[in-house]
Image 1 (cartoon, rainbow, N blue to C red):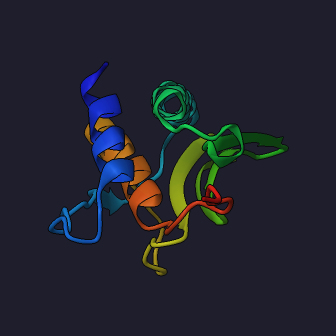
Image 2 (tube, rainbow, N blue to C red; image 1 turned 30 degrees about the vertical axis):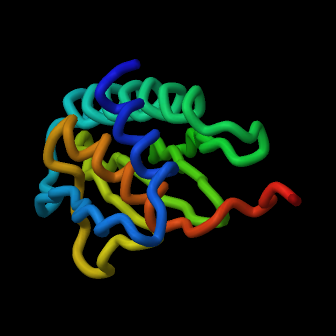
Length: 143
């Protein structure tokens, strides 16, 4: 198993008696960049999110309790959303007059001026936080 898969396994196997693990991700203020660089960054973040999502889903036991990923390509924006147990987080890159600006939106994301993830490690941390803050599975096993 990869280090990320081990972290997911730790999160889903944690009991109420386990000390809470401090999870956080870093963001930075979004700044306009050339459109081609913004598109490249968006595609790289999306590809990493998909890879990590697949790793997490390999660890999560119930098929209907897996993370989901939805892509949207709008006229002036690239966007993908990660869903888990009724919570969502969205990464978007909007294009205007040859520039691009990234934005992170969703559950647990502070509202305010546009911010984007700072690094690849923060993509993993964001997904781990989405899993850990989502509460119990929707379909608990009957005993």
